[in-house]
Image (cartoon, rainbow, N blue to C red; front, side, top):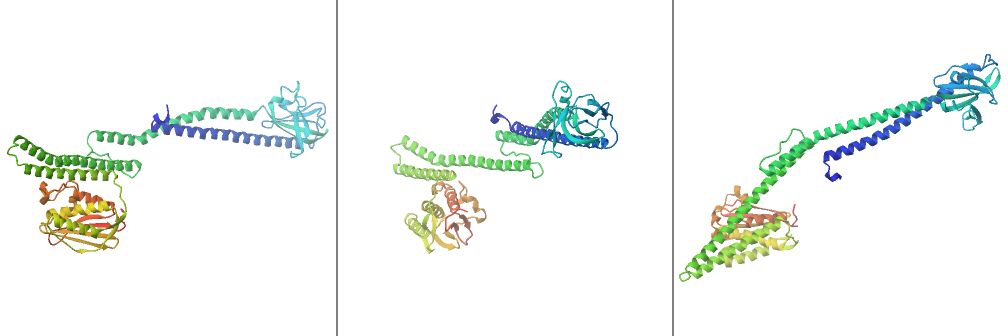
Amino acid sequence: MTSRHLSIRARLTFFFVISIAMVLVFTGIALVSLVHRSLVTSASNQVQNALTATQERFASGTMPTSHVVALPVLGDVVVQVTNVSGTQVWAASTPIVHAPVLAHSLSDPTSSNGLALELINNARTSAIVPELSLGQVATITTPRGPGLVFGFVYNGPINHRVSILLASVAVSFPLLLVVSGALIWFGLGLALAPVESIRRRVDAIAARDLSERVPVTGGDDEIARMARTVNAMLDRLEASSKFQQEFVSNVSHELRSPLTTLLATADRAANDQQNADWSEVTETILREGRRLDVLIDDLFWLARNDERQIDATRVDVDFDDILFEEAARVRSVKGLSVDTSAVQPTRVKADPAMIKRMIRNVVDNASRYAKSELRFDSHYDEDEVVVWVSDDGPGIDVATSAKLFERFVRADPARNRYSGGTGLGLSIVAEIVARHGGRAQFIAVNQGTRIELRVRRDGRAN
């Protein structure tokens, strides 16, 4: 099974167990090595102390010549005293008192006394030599003359103690690893339990009702922050879901009206071709067809903008030129008076197609409400270009006007669908000014309605 098929709990447990195992291995090696060095150092000191004690014992007094002097065992150390030539044993510790000469002395410039020893391996010493280790040699003065004293660690106590330590490590460390693994497994289970609870809760919410939320525990730990983040995501999902449902409903409603009119008109004309007013039929089809064309174009633009598929260029755009063009169009098409006396030369770095669409939507919106006159104004305000489009219509409630920039929202006087509004024009305006680092809003005036557009002169979004 690959790591992709393992749960986070299993992967983390495996990682920590492997890590602990590596730590235990290195710890065991270091512990055994340290204990071994400590035992060797202690044993070497004991051998040296035994040699010194033996030298002091025979420095004065008498020594029998007829038999080997039996010496007491000093801890784990045995000693053997021989003549200089190494042919006779003069004294020895009790365990080796009957043993023959066990070692010869050698010259060794690296040792502290210039001497080293070499064990004698033959048939007579084969039973004893394997029990000796860490041998040292020194000269000694005895009543029988100069001699040599050999000291050894006897009966392998170091190896025995190291073996006991290795056995203890071999048993305790795997047991410790198993216990650690179990504790890590249960600990991770407890730590991840809230995460699993949140996952199940989100799964249930996604299947039932997006208005439900994940319980948030107290504190500011990772779980609490994750719960708050998940709830914030659910808020956005719920809002997006509601927006999508409302959007589909609004689109269906907007499309149904002209299609119903088209079908009803065509059906009446087809059922009574002789008496049908074909000029009225033609006018109705053209009017509703244009409405469908504008609506579909607006929907397509918003869909592409939501998906960031509209590439915006940055070139010099003169707001005053666009406003003068719109003024001429309104005068010729709408028959309204347009005051452009307050239009000043204003230039920005922007996408010309978007800016023209934005101004066209605002002007068309004002034209639908105007009684007889529109007023245009453009000027600089520090690093922004400000455009005002005013009409002499009935006016709106500025306090609640922000909702008019939402999709498919109309002011009450615009409820007449035959006026040409789709409820998307101002939402497109809001999207365009936002992409150019600006904002759109209605501002209070004494008479009529005024919409204000602010666009950064460099055209950059904030």
